[in-house]
Image (cartoon, rainbow over all chains, first blue to last red; front, top):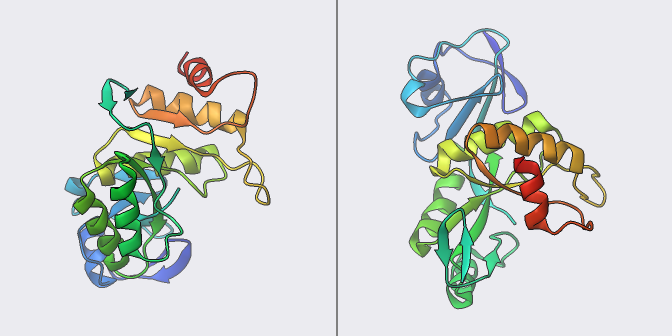
Length: 65
Length: 147
């Protein structure tokens, strides 16, 4: 299905966030995720079902002022 | 002595973590400064999390208090979501709140800032709004937001 991942439209096979991280080769540490502008706690990643058209943001810490 | 939300610091210096020539120099500069609070940012991660992991390891080694910011956010919704992501990621209710009003000068959007701060305060996030210079001090400004 087609989702928007970090601003880019991508085709994914994953049906939940944990599967998506594996599919896209993310390490599971130091990440936070929002789906459709709602933050999904780490404990809910595997229970969060993804749907076509979802907007997913995966963010990590970076240098900033 | 500096106090934020009941937490006391011996240094009044808050340091950013951007634009150092190298990660090593960043660490050395923060240590040499004596700053106990450093600001960090959040970015979309496209490298499997490895870039963020490397940076975060450096910050953790410093044993300082982290103040996440919402740099790069242009709307209230973006800033609120980023602040909530920061709470999830860093485990802190603190946020240095920024809503950009002008791309060229990076002047804040004060109206958006007030709206975002109001939303965050209601969800128990503790924001430090970055506002343009006005007749209000930042402290008074933050209090006005909290009301």
